[in-house]
Length: 281
Image (cartoon, rainbow, N blue to C red; front, side, top):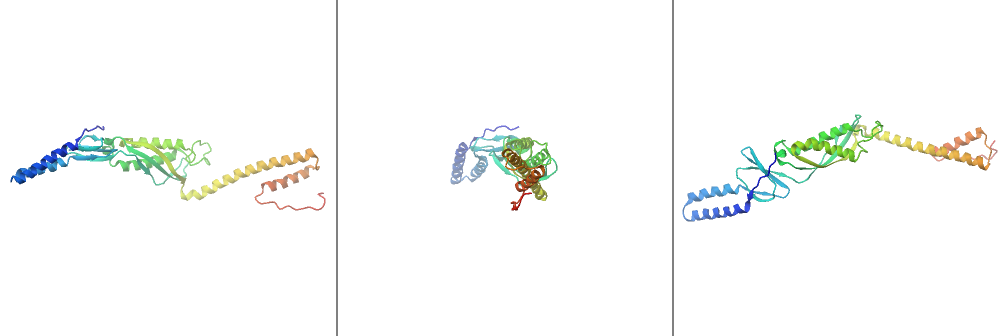
């Protein structure tokens, strides 16, 4: 469990070092080199106790294998020279992961990359519960991505009942990613501030096929709208001709007119009209 260590002021021991330095000089001047050498050793020993803790930085202190506490108050400090000191930054850090290949819920290979914002919250866990907490965060983030991909399909083209997909899930998918990463890195005393998917695409081996499928789906949807509109226009044309009595059409002529109008309205290319200069009969 993390505990705070109250380190002494470094400036007070600077004064002690100045006194020792004066005594060393005095010893050599007075012809007493042996006490001066002892004072030099003491001067060097005290000097090893100085430590500077910058803002949003901490120092974990260990004495002969025993955890003695963590310094989080920034400033110029002095601690027991026998302490082993390990500095750990408390600043927020970014992890921009390289896209990795994973399988979505229905087995399609996709590429996913994430941006993770995190920081150390408990220095004891970060220093002693895992071997390398930075590498630990990277590996656990990758594991969380793999699990997240298995929960949702890439889109709902094949899984029509899926309400949330990786592509359209937005905040819900990101919240699930953040929760999953936070649970995994909690053992290392890491706080996850934000987790977001910043890259999402089909894997290269199926990207072309999926693009063609999406294009075909878009074409079918567009054709449906075109046909729906064309039927309405043909129906309106027949109704208007009947109401105004412009021309009398039997069922065969109506069928011919409907066929011609549907070809004109639904064709991919501009229609080329054929002008009939004789009787329509």
